[in-house]
Length: 129
Image (cartoon, rainbow, N blue to C red; front, top):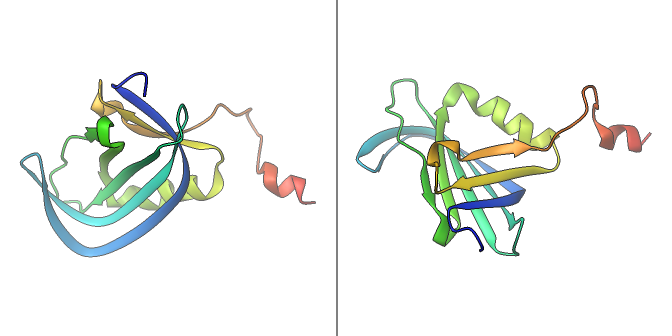
């Protein structure tokens, strides 16, 4: 990996996990986890496996800072449980989609689409007609 502070990978698979409630500590902050979406894929500049865990927290939970471990190609970000449906919708309906692990600015760790023209619609659907 050329830049040890930033890693970008194309998300190829995801897994949704619902929890009744799991309390876990991240860097001294207790998080009340209700859901987890694990995003996995291969590096944009290498063929290594990467993972970004997106934890969805109960409304009364503290929110930990993003966790980034570039050396082990892992990261975690934390969002409100009310955002889980919109997040999964993006994973289901957009392509390509990328995970960005930011060791330099962990708060910028993210999931993104590429630039698309306005009104592009579902290209896969139109191609199958």
